[in-house]
Length: 436
Ligand code: SF4
Image 1 (cartoon, rainbow, N blue to C red):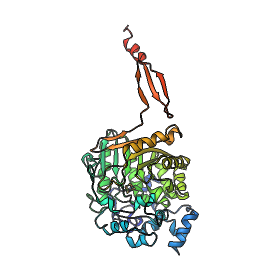
Image 2 (cartoon, rainbow, N blue to C red):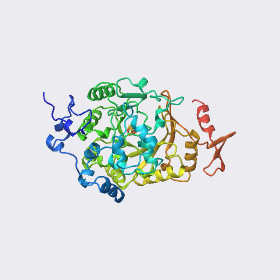
Image 3 (cartoon, rainbow, N blue to C red):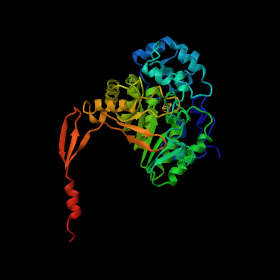
Image 4 (cartoon, protein in one colour):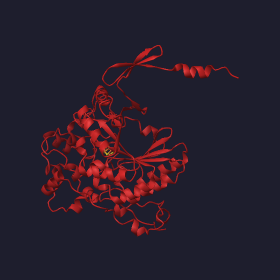
């Protein structure tokens, strides 16, 4: 039987998913009783994005002749990704080290940047924070002690391809291997952007859904990858609708860096589709305040206006965001666009990451400099995802200084000590209450 519709046409050129069809089909009649399949599949255009003045200047200079409509079309951005040294050289002065690293790219974690994100890079300074996150350097070719390709032991906790089941009531569902822009510090650099991943993507997704349906304790599914927003709206909806059909799945989350690297993807059509699957949360990924452009703000506001709760994860990176001032600016900008800073991650010890990793003391000191000096909800939880699959462990400055009998000694954000009379007697009294 022919599928209800064919989705490969909406996949970006070069995508390994082009040509695939889903066997288990989303039935448009069930989900959209009032629309024909043809209407649903109209390309997502929606009201356009504006282009901020700095980015327009960049576009005029390096992409002469490209119309605003093309620039704001996420497919155009994907098709024109910067993926080689000559591409990059056209817009920035490549350092000798970057040039050498780019010449060793074959078979390695890919280098790709959207033209939009490239517009945010400093063209002359190789130490520019955003540039360091996306342009390879030779340091990533050196493996230090304790580094692993899979430091979090995800493979060992994967009962079926694409599922990581570490915590009892939730799973990580890796549906995509692709991203629009590759972060050099990516925890899953062993998987994303590669072509050797296990099995076909549709088999992996169907198998993951089957696993989630069969395990009734799973109430929370984090749909991640790669970046799930690299899928067409229709493919993403197919995943969401199938997850929503599982009665015990209460919450769906989508993990994505798209609003930071490809805000044009957050079209009105995408947002309209996503809002149908509430409670749906989005875990966004921001690294530096310079990512919060007008375009990115607009993308986040579209999502927030649709009632989708937004939270952000940030990886602590040496020389990029490892100061309280940078973090404070980032978190303030995020809460202004209704994105709640959620986790600050110690950078995972992936192979070739030593130039990105800070001492843990740096993270603790940043949290100490934020807590009390800004709103509590603007301070994320600093965590180390423990190597070997132990899960996330919060790492905090010390606030409980000790006990004196029933008195707890607490240090406040200014370093002053306060005493809190604890009440351990209450539960004791209840326990010791004579039985009738
Ligand atoms: S967006 Fe996420 S999955 Fe993609 S390269 Fe960056 S960190 Fe990795």
